[in-house]
Image (cartoon, rainbow, N blue to C red):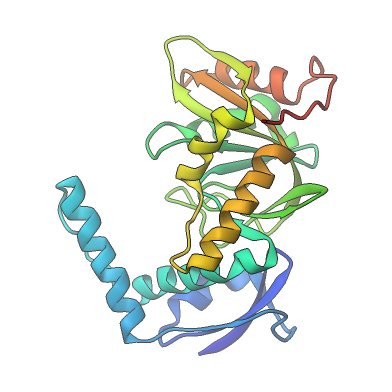
Length: 256
């Protein structure tokens, strides 16, 4: 099966053996011809995904999940696309992106910290003004003059996300805390934490470009660290600091 999809403003051709990927990507389908590259999967790609599943289960000491070939192929397709996107100033980020009044706020943290919970609290606090761009793997287009966050078909276990794009206003690194607190952080403090959440390609040149893009991201948007509880008050603290009426500056933090 072959079809073309527009992702982060670029059109990619995808050829697969199984239909699951095309069902997942339906909202991104386009009649345009590829503007960048094409992706095709084979048995070796599925074998790689299966090996990675086994390795992760062994590392965590957890039972080995069983995925269908079509599900493994979905991951293989996205991995190939993520490997190719740095050449076009785009990267895949593990985080939850919320749009409020047409501007994006990206929350990053290790799995299980509460990114999705916090993003949902913004919706509870702000109502229809807030919408989830992507709750797991947004794609970022990082230019010299700013960053745009895009929805992707890979929306995490809650399935929250849309085919949309917003200018990214701020990135917030979450950590659990007994009390809610937020403060700006510097480029050098944020960079290693951001590095943990970005997709890192296997190809050396693509990885090098990813690191350059990450550096540009860390310097191009405002950066915060949020210690938070899973309560609505955490969203109030974050919104007031990052995007609410009390935040009247657009200062960008930069490192050395």
